[in-house]
Length: 306
Figure (cartoon, helix red, strand yellow):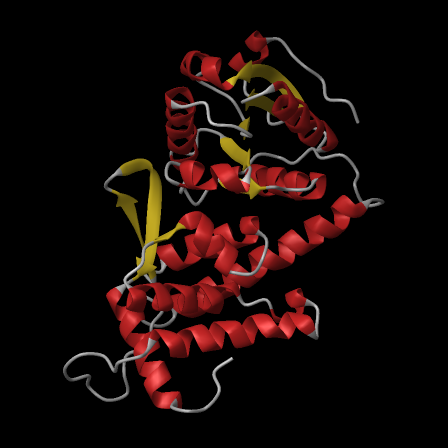
């Protein structure tokens, strides 16, 4: 389906199907146009990232913005990401940011708002699914084209299952301690039990070996994989940026980012800005999560932890 481009004045009236596109290159713009068009939505305007800040400042009302990033545009991109994150946080519009793995850290440093959808190296189906999720979260009516006959329908079904799984996790966590971490059965005394970095690395290696014998997504457990990676980093006194943690999750980066937001919202992970680089954030275990992981390894002892 070809997208319909409307005049900028159309955005003065709220149109639940209108999407403003900002992109970092002509190729990025074309990808965004295809995704929005395939979703059956109206393209209200197309602007380069360098000019998007002024366009957004002039537009008091819009339904959605799509930002497509395939290269670093410096301060202009940073300012736009800040504006988009603020708009999503204040629920002034739905927002999707599509980016590459190379640019993920720069994007994640400024776009960590739960209501904002981030797609990393996404297929067309991933992009349509992200658009559907963003519009639905914003509360606007969905006017997507019929994708039941193509692969996008399967990706939308997978997204629904993925979001439902995360929602179920949130529901379970909300019925327990505020952080989602169970207290120790016996009062903890002194420091948490020591765990060697080699022990954790061995567990991570064992988990990765399963992919030699079975399809990797059969054992997808991004929350546990991220917990293990952060514990290993903590023991080795290393810092873990968002992009590295997404790789460690062993699932598509877009999925890993959704789980990362869940773990941060529950106080299991902590995001810390890089004091030397304003375009990067690190992720680490919250103290309670670190203690829980160490207690776990102490309890299982020599039993193989997979």
